[in-house]
Length: 419
Length: 89
Ligand SMILES: Cc1cc2nc3c(=O)[nH]c(=O)nc-3n(C[C@H](O)[C@H](O)[C@H](O)COP(=O)(O)OP(=O)(O)OC[C@H]3O[C@@H](n4cnc5c(N)ncnc54)[C@H](O)[C@@H]3O)c2cc1C
Ligand SMILES: [Zn+2]
Image 1 (cartoon, chains in turn yellow, blue):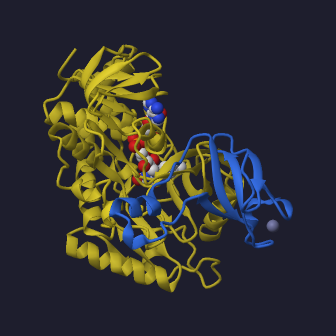
Image 2 (cartoon, chains in turn brown, orange):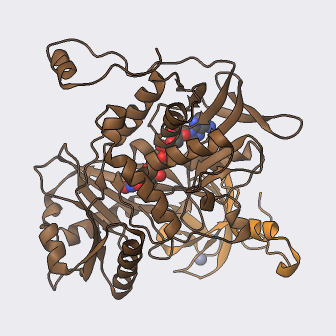
Image 3 (cartoon, protein in one colour):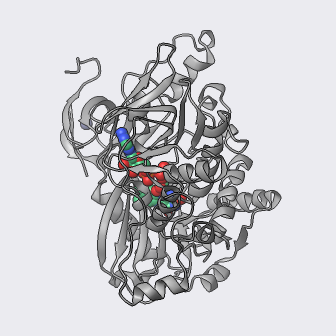
């Protein structure tokens, strides 16, 4: 089966409603001896990379390998905030490239990724926040990216449950609003890319952990060792988020990365109460409401590096305390689930997309606490980079060697977080 | 929350401490003499292992002293802590 997946339409949904069972949405592929491109990591970024390689760059002999199940990493664990109002021009170009792709993604994939541009409100709680966010608003205006400054009353009108009174524990001095920002359905993004890539011939191989990177006499990467045997590859793209350091160490490359547990929680489902996304970097609280009715809440990272996928209880408690101070009515809600994901953070809180010192080995990582929003754009420019062997112009500034040249893309300055 | 055994004060809750990252990262003696790559490596490259990690902590809201900690980054279990200069097992 190559080319198009069986299309979803109103009629096909009606037929299934009448009892017809659903077909598998992607093939459960067995590994071949070798591929033109092997991608390590079947998260959103790896799957999107495979999709665009096949769709736009004419490479269809691709395997996407995952040690677990596809979308089981940070893609399936994140709070899905999407926005593009970053400060530095390089970042704004990158995230805006992604946002434009989000806007048409459901149609492009013929799969409902539930992208909902309900607006992302970033709260300013102190004088420093006000100055930083206003600077972002002005910078974004010059970049042609929508971002506007709201007074506390305007913020309250946009998000009625928000507490802006004089007795507020975390006073709201104003907010930056990106109206085109919003959320999407994380699993659907992974599944939509997987389905479309698989239909074009991409092999998605789950339960296949990469345990080594094979290099030839000249030092070039020529394949991977896996728990399901060796697989040759003309090019290898690593898109393994929190595990990138571990994988790159297999090729002898040390990375400017540290891995941390980042937590999230969801509440019991309730009727619509949160019309938009609210972010508060200062107190590490991020909140929106899913279409199922659960409040989706993002917390902060632990202080120390970890691969535990858990995180300290006090981190989640601090965030809940902040949420309840800002939205007093949510005090009565019960939390249903709490989990962690392992995020890979760089010193400047910007990602790394491009070449490595090892010929044939490419890397896409360092998205840290905020890479879901970049998924389509990241996949697209990483595919271009893998296809040509040269960084895509949007990817070029995000090179690994910026940590030697000193050309940082500093998104850490505002609050040391970039969700 | 971790319970971290300060080598001087004994076990205390994690929020009394400040994490300091990988231990034993040595600053080049003459920064001007090393290459950009070597200086960048000193500043930014870290082992970030999955498993045993030798790391720096400071008992900030306690005795204030620095020490070395050996922790497993998968289980977050602390194997041992050491005063500066002590051999790490
Ligand atoms: C709690 C939480 C909240 C977040 N909130 C937001 C948010 O609101 N907005 C936002 O933009 N971003 C957010 N993020 C960040 C975002 O989730 C990530 O940046 C993004 O999803 C990374 O996608 P990925 O495809 O690179 O990684 P992943 O989805 O993690 O995929 C990497 C894959 O690599 C696989 N892998 C690892 N090692 C190996 C190996 N040796 N062999 C084979 N496969 C391997 C893993 O199993 C995994 O499936 C959040 C993250 C977390 C944890
Ligand atoms: Zn002490």
